[in-house]
Length: 324
Image (tube, rainbow, N blue to C red; front, side, top):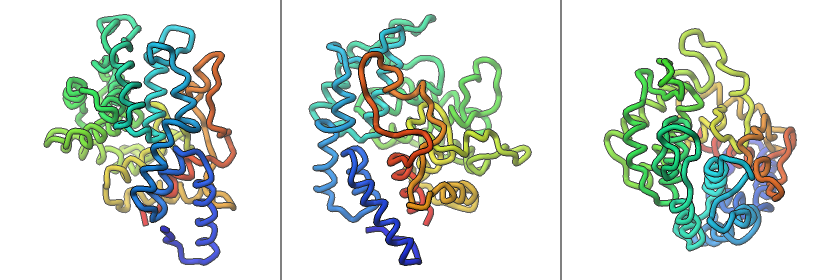
C-alpha cells in the first residue's frame, strides 16, 4: 500500500481513509485499489466489473428509456445522455463489457442534437459547434470506442495562440478559457489513449498543458491574480467547470512531471484535508448532476455539499501521490 508520509500517525490516517474508500461503491473501490494500494490486477478487474451490475453504475444504467437514452422530460435528451455517459466513464464502466457495448450502441444509433442550427438532427458523436461540448463528446466517444476523428480534427484547428480553447472564440474571443481547455484536453488525452495518438494530438496536448502550467493552474498570466475563486473549490461531478483539483488530476492522468508551477495548487489540495484525512464536496454544479436532471427517477451518490466526499478524497489522494 502507498504511504508517502513520514509520521506514523499520519500514516495510520491514510490507511483509515483508504479503508473508508474501499468500504464504498464498486466505482470508488476499484479505483482506490488500482491507484492507492498494491492490489493485484485481476482483483482490480473483478471489482471494476461490478460497476455494471451493482451500486451507482447499475442504478444509472437502469434509468435509461427503451431507446437507450436518458430523459429529463424536456428537450435536451442528448445533454442528459452525455452527462450520464461521462458519469459512467468516471465510474470506470468497462468499455469492453457487453453492457457498455450495448449501451453505447443505442446512444450512437438514437441520440441526435436537438438545438437549433445546422447541427440539429445530426448524430451526437458527430459533434456540434462548441469546443467545450465537443471536448466532452470526444472523451465519451473515445472511451467507449466510437469514431470521433472528425471532432478531433476540428478541435485541433481551433486551438488558440496561447495554447487554450474557448467556446467564445466564434464570438471574437482571442484568449483561452480554463473551462473549455480542460474539457478539450481530457477529450484529446482519451482519444490518444484509444487510438495510439498522433504527432498533432501530442503537440496540442503539450501546448494545452503549458496553458495551465504557465498560469500555475489558478492565476492570470498577465497579473498573477486568482482568476476565479471557484477554481479553489473542488466539485464533483465537474461537468464543464474547471477547478484546480480537476486540472491536477488531468496532469496526473497525462503523466506530466510535476514542477514548481503546480506547487501552489498542490498546497491548496493538501489544505482541504479535514481532521480525519478526507476532502469535502464543495461548490456542486447542480446542472451537471444526473440526479438533479432526471425527473421522477432517483439517482444519487450519497454526497452532500460540505460533507466528506469519496470522489474528492480519491482524486486528491492520487494527485498527492503523483506530486510526491
